[in-house]
Length: 269
Image (cartoon, rainbow, N blue to C red; front, side, top):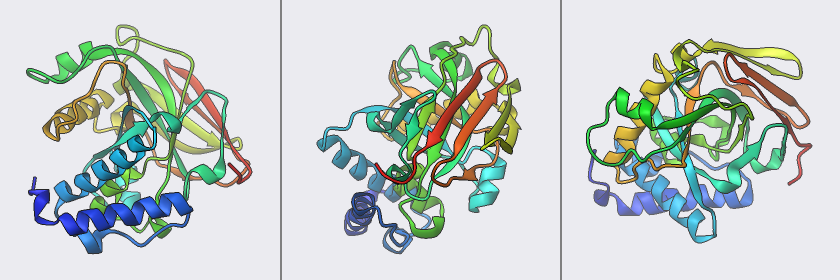
C-alpha cells in the first residue's frame, strides 16, 4: 500500500470531517477530495485515526467487520473489492434489543454470520485450516450499516475511511462450532416488518465466509492490527442490504444458526 505519510494533511482533515459528522449526526461530504480514490492506505490511516479518537473517549475494540463481500452489495455501492472496519463495544446489541434509530446515520441492514475467535491470528502462516481452527463458534448476526457521508455517496476510499460504514451489530443466541455448521452452504433470509428483503447463502460472501475471514486475517495483520482471541468478526453480507426507517422490526434466519432479531427505535437515543 502507498505510504500514508505522503498525505498527512489530507488524512487528518478527512478524519476530522468524519468525526464531526458522527458527533453532530449530520452527514458530511465525501472525503475522496482529501485522500483521493486510489490510495487505500491513506483511507485506512483515516480509519485508524478515528478508532484512536473513539478509544480515547473510552470505547473498546471488540472485533472487526468485513464489508463489501457480497456481489449484490458491491453492485449497490459501485465497488469491486472487500474492506474492513473496527467494531467497538458501544456498537454491540443482543438478540431482540432495540437499536436507537438516531445512533446510526442513514441506516441499512445486512444479515451475516459472525465468528467469535478462540485463538489469535497474529503469527505464522495464515491459511484456511488455521483460520477454521481459530473459530470458537459462529452465530447469526445483523449489521446495521451507517454512513457518515451524505447520501451514501461513497467510493472504496470513502467507506474505508468511514470505518467501512460500520454502525451497530446484533448477535444471535444460538452458537455453533464449525464441526457442526458449514458457513458456505448456510441459507439466509431476512425480513423487515414481515416482508422478505434479502436472500442469499454463505457462498454469496466471497464464495465462503471463511474465505472472507482469511482475507481479513491477512489484511489486518499486514496493517499491524492482527485478529485476537475473543474478537467478533462479522463475515460480510450474505445478500443485499436494505434501508431502515424508525420503528421497523428486523428478523434474519440463517440455516444452522437460527434467527436473530432487532427493532429500530423511533428516532431518539
